Length: 91
Image 1 (tube, rainbow, N blue to C red):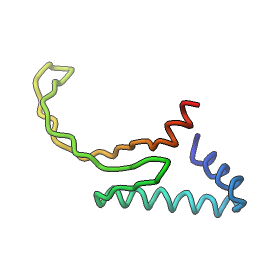
Image 2: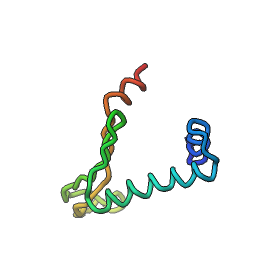
Image 3: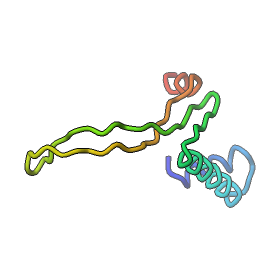
């Protein structure tokens, strides 16, 4: 599903105009992005949880040269689905 398809689905489900639905979708995505950037967790009961985890630094290999390289630690966003979402996908 693309962003436009999501906007259309929100518009159809809520009765909002496409412009209003686009603003709502954009607002939600911005709020989630800003919360994760602050290190906060976004928990949508029944849907899932967005959070930021830190990946530890590790050693890797440069595929071109075969030399060992240090891969630095970094923060990555993760999503853990809720029970209702898991059930809906399994059905």
